[in-house]
Each structure stands twice: as structure tokens, then as C-alpha cells.
Image (cartoon, rainbow, N blue to C red; front, side, top):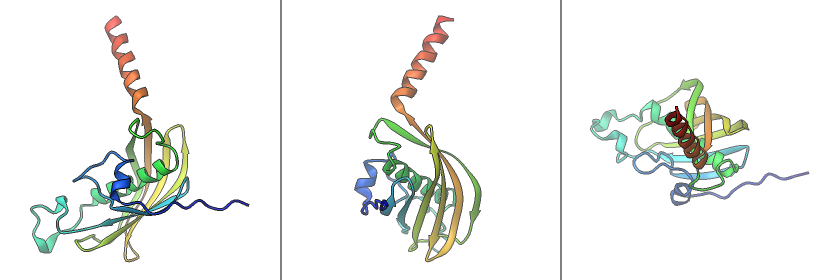
Length: 170
């Protein structure tokens, strides 16, 4: 019988080592827990100072729905990294390739703590299918099936170079 390997929490500094996002587009604050190849639980603290609220009246600030999806995608990126799919730091890149069965619930406003949970459905040949769900105080905010593509940047650069050389040869 095997036991699950739960990873300890990680803060923003640790997460920044593994995903390419930076301020102001970093939409997760910390990883609470992760079981590689299974699931991850990530937190986003929503604040009045978040860049996407700039220019909005203080009484009408609602986190944009596409940024809620992007938060889920970043959580999925953390899951993929800790699952060994992005093991060569700085050499692989994670693409949010699509979403299906997306449903939105309550609005997210400053002061809310967004709990993002991503579960690996399957992963093969650099493509991961992940189910993501975000909640605030137990209320559903967004739920979606995500598709992620993980590519080796060196392999992609080599393919572009080969394609350019073939084009010139014609």
C-alpha cells in the first residue's frame, strides 16, 4: 500500500520560480497543498490594489471572469510543475490552450479569498486535461475543464529554425 505524497505549502516567491507569470499578471498568491499528478489547492487574495481594478469605482469592483479563468490556469500550471511535467525550470513553457464546460457563479470582490482547486484528469504527450473549480467561502465562482499544453522551448526553437531553413531552401 502506498501513501499519498502531499507537498508543503509554497509562497509567491517559490511559485514564481516555476511559472512564467509576473506582476501584474500573477493571479495566485500561494499554494496551500498539492498531491503531484492528482490535485493542487491554491489561494488568491483579492485586494482593492489589484491592477485589474484600476479605474473602476470602489463600489463596483468585480474581478473579471476571464481573469478568474486565468487564475485557474495558473493553478493548473502549478499542478503540472509539481507533477514533473515542467521539470527543467526555464526550459519548458505552459500554454493555457482551452476550456470546456465553463460555468460562472458568484462575483469576486476586493476582500474575498479565492480558493482555486485543480484536479488532473489525464496527461499524455505534453497535453494535460485538468478540472478546475474556484470558490469563495464555499460558494462556486467558476468551474471549468482546462486544457494545458506543455512544450520544451528548446525543441520549439529548433523546429522554427528548421522550418525557416526549409523555407529558404525552396
